[in-house]
Image 1 (cartoon, rainbow, N blue to C red):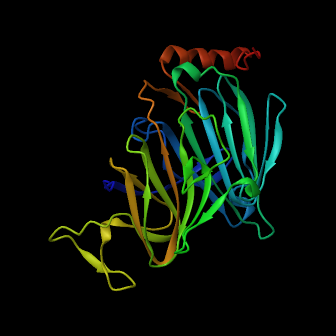
Image 2 (cartoon, rainbow, N blue to C red; image 1 turned 90 degrees about the horizontal axis):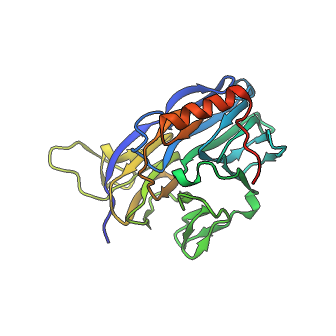
Length: 303
């Protein structure tokens, strides 16, 4: 067994998207090989409708899959193929854009005006970029949750852990997508596939994602139990944690516990030609997609 080292911790950056939605972007529109097969990750949350109610009006997607996980509030969605619905608190939508759709997503807050969710973009391999669009809408009540003896809880959205499998299937990157809550002071190790790209995203509490001793001369501080923790490894709200290779990750939860997403997927390792919500393999394919948008042939006939 080998512990994955922390390559980098990064605080998500404030960003405006859609018609004026305030969100924080952990990665995206940078080097697409960095998180391959994942392209972009957004944390959208707000305590007042002014921060999110303008939503994401009609826009295209081709060549990718989008994964929307809602914690608070609701998201109304609809597309050019006639699909529509509402994602409630705790629910997930895995949308395979494939050959192309036009869709919109309009967030609504809960009774207190709060909205919180995440969106992850996963790339499609070239052989599947023009596949037929597909939706998987999963209600929160259908996402299994497992609890360990120490109080650690995991919502299994995708993949399998501790003998429990998530409800989303048939995804190109064959990812694991877990919502993990570790109680205060608990140190926990999770197995991950050695050959998958893996990241964690902390959105509540804090924790240290490495149990290696701090090198001599590196500043350390005491955690709430009096143990020394390398301050470089402390990760709090809206922190992305990128890992190196290995088959385990370890987290030491802080005094308020820690809640984070743990996501991994098989790298595609193909060329990327990317413009906004359209991701292809070559510039020629990208230009064809833009031409399709202009001349009204973006939506492909069903085969």
